[in-house]
Length: 464
Ligand SMILES: [Zn+2]
Image (tube, rainbow, N blue to C red; front, side):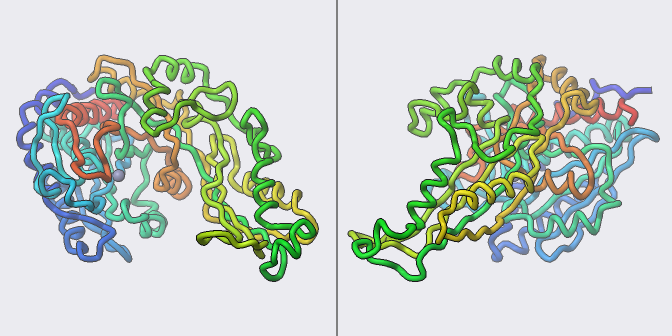
């Protein structure tokens, strides 16, 4: 027997003032994870989450780590129903520059905006508001039906904004307790306020630093220039060869294993009202620049890249110094897409540099990280159920979007727990996460809780 969603949505509607008061309560705790002065506040936020989870029947507790505690809460669904691992974080970004806040960052309040009222406070959207959307959905199900439609494990981190140092060790130690059928991550945004969105694609990363060594000491360019390899010239030349005239990456085998984007998704992206002019105008660029024959959205969501993120060598102080330096270095990174193997790309990058070194030059490589791209298959039953559930709330088709950057937690959840992640968030581009006057639209908070309630119901109706 399936449980009715409608009374759950009605309850959420009635309970909205209380839900808002709960969120405000949480937002008043300055849980800035990166600042040791706020260690006790982080602990207090974790305890707040535990108390809230327990109040609705979760078996919840904090778990100590080398840093800030994790929060874990479990509740079973009906027998045979799938289990969701819900991931979010209770810590927030620092508030500086404090002078740009119209009101103190930890005194949440409502302001008027173009979509009606908005919640303004540090953490309003990132990530306390999004976490509470999910918890309000759970609370409403419990209240109306006495049980959740599926099993839920709530897993909240307190170090997301400070590099998640305890995340991987904790996943390893709590592996069996974190088992589920799907991971639902809520820490992202929507395409726009009316379009429900699921981020189903995240690009991976290979990051490498290369240092070229030439002469054993700095040389006078008058005395030696033209007769010896100059590491700056050589490095610049090699980087210059990394793209062809169509801006395609020239590393050996770079594109070989890439899985083509399903035509249906490409067609969906064409329908999105994406403006190159706005996207580029915002950063003072008049024309896009990238792989020939691809759109800007494809370039940032579904095509691989190679970028130099920093380069230095020789003399870089004021004025002139005619010197040929001993070495030059560059930081190089590739954004990867599904199918690309980070280890192979890294090797190919090393080979590309090594093969082009003149005699008398030597290269040294330093690995700064490798992780693969992630793709949730468009035909995954969980994804389809969640997309359909949100369509029922917004009365509009759910779009599957990509994210240009990688989210390390999602990669670790895949690698260590073997779980795919579905990223469902309700933030907007202009929410100012990490910025002064961070806000979360009240409409997004309400629709977010409604969406999560619908997703719980839809996943509960699946049988793995
Ligand atoms: Zn976040």
